[in-house]
Length: 148
Image (cartoon, rainbow, N blue to C red; front, top):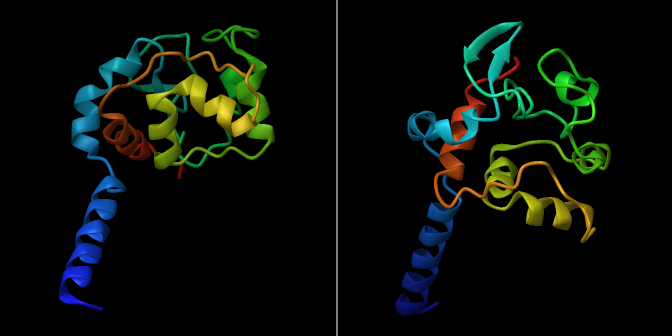
């Protein structure tokens, strides 16, 4: 391999590594207000981060099956049954498990993400807000709220 080809390969690898770099939890915490209008972070009844009542609790979301959060799935005083589309539940039943990477991708284009995941042009999640920037940072922040 020539030095030019080798240098080009190293440059490409460096760019690819940067594009897949993990988000910054501290930046994500500062940006979380974009999410808190709909989502709270609650552990065992203790509100860790105040938020709205229209989205599922995001405590322990990383590693969770999509659409399976108890209040989201079955309703509660916080979230009445029937507020959510069955498509997120269906995505979970078809194997979608939340990771930092797919939370970031979902946050950038929720409708497109679910359509692609389910291979269904009619699929719709309840979330339609697209994060133009900071999705990786918010996903990294959410990962700090592990259910373990």
